[in-house]
Image (cartoon, rainbow, N blue to C red; front, side, top):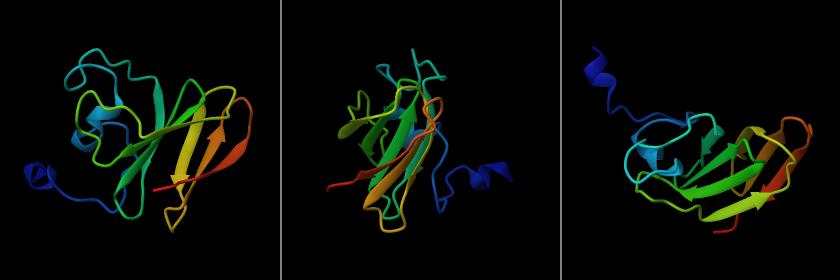
Length: 114
């Protein structure tokens, strides 16, 4: 049933809600005070050590994974898009992140440094 799937480990993580990503949202605990429209896209690195997000402000943020602690500041913030980021993905090696902008239609490749 559904309770068996509650703690299932998935091969990827591309949704902005859930226990492992609670810390990407502003607020002191849980999802309290979060504006759920700000973060548009997330992706977990292949080695499951990092999480990348793209938001409405054109920022690409890199977090340690799991990002469940509050408050949780990004490890690194990349700026380059002039509007919302519609998609982010790690490459297969986890060494680069690809981000796609909404209005600017730009594809940017970011180098991930450990």
